[in-house]
Image (cartoon, rainbow, N blue to C red):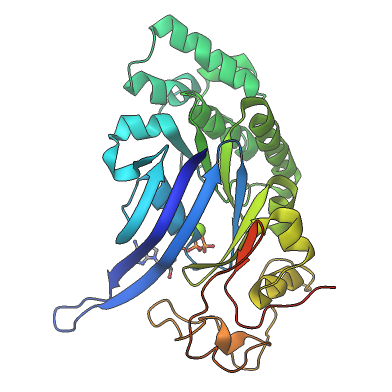
Length: 318
Ligand SMILES: Nc1ncnc2c1ncn2[C@@H]1O[C@H](COP(=O)(O)OP(=O)(O)OP(=O)(O)O)[C@@H](O)[C@H]1O
Ligand SMILES: [Mg+2]
């Protein structure tokens, strides 16, 4: 069963409106299709600004799509009340410093999602908080401290405990480790892997770090300028990318500054603006494989078993 489905979702923002000038339209998402099965981990990758966090906000119901649909457990996200939605999907954000209220003790922070929904009694909630603290590897007495007394890694464990306390179906993790010291990143990733396994959680994992995605995701979706340009099982995508953009992204990991930027693929070609996405295939100005039609015809998705890609001249593999 698909716990999450996104169909033809677009998101635009009006930007740069001034008193005299008309605004411009920024195309953050330009037609996203996605289906995620229960218990699956989907990795979302792509350069900064391609729309990953915007898609995350749509899935979390923080914002609605401009057009298209996002459905959770078969029902449009917008059709749920806030508390109902919180029962289904919970976020884990990048920065565990700003995402925890500094004036609340950990016990209250973690209990908040079940407290607002009025689940159980005060004592059963305390019991549940103890259980999730244990599940994320935090000592029980941490319930009495404030966020400022904890390290970054410990705070991210608190954020994960809070996300789990109400037993949601889906966790949306937007760069869950990129604000942490390298030494604790793998601990948090191992924790997510274990929770996924033990609780059957469905994870949406957004990360710049392809190694992280390779390690945790069952399937990967590669985004470019508001589109999913390639998706499929992790091993297939990493082992034999069909879209030249996926191949470039993988190659950038091997560049001197890992994950920092894509290597320049064509002199003078820069990341194009979502204010004016190039016609045809949006990647064509940077694409080493671009040929006839790429500048004018937007490629439909080609399906190949469990994977799909949008490219007129896909890479061949032996
Ligand atoms: N509220 C907003 N108003 C205007 N533009 C926005 C808004 N939110 C996002 N954008 C724009 O939409 C595009 C996609 O942004 P988004 O944050 O989803 O990218 P991202 O893939 O998460 O990037 P990063 O990897 O840097 O986090 C960007 O051009 C961004 O500037
Ligand atoms: Mg983002």
